[in-house]
Length: 212
Ligand code: URA
Image (cartoon, rainbow, N blue to C red; front, side, top):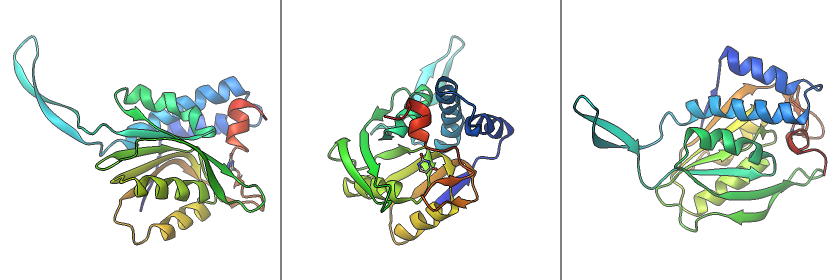
């Protein structure tokens, strides 16, 4: 598994505003959206392209376009939805599948409550959107789900990550042949006793959409 911590002053600046407890939901949503676009630029570094011949007004040239099968973007509901638009803005021709996962706040175990994904993901590069890589439970379950359907490459985009989650993910896929990459805006210190990232930003879903 590869982990890439984006080291860019603009990302750190926006993350600081995102973390701030005084940031309201509309601003939080805008910042999350902007951060995803910046992280997605890094996360799609290895997206597959195919050569195409075009003509400019001056003459012929060789360019590229996204290869088939199209990349699949998978936001993990609910908080991952806040990252979807920032991702599809960068890659508008990608397909989007949905995975609803919920974490039991006592056991910290993740379970799937909704799916809308192609049955066959053979040959697909998948981009999973999950703002918080905390215990790793949700992301591990999501990656297993995608690998079972044939995904050949998975890149997770997370606004923040905790070392415990990265270790869990690494151990879970130690022997997997499917390459997994995590691109994150920052690696925080640790998890607290409730599985929240410290210093983190609190509950990403609540901060995006309110407590429901
Ligand atoms: N999920 C969140 O929303 N925040 C955390 O800190 C951990 C998991």
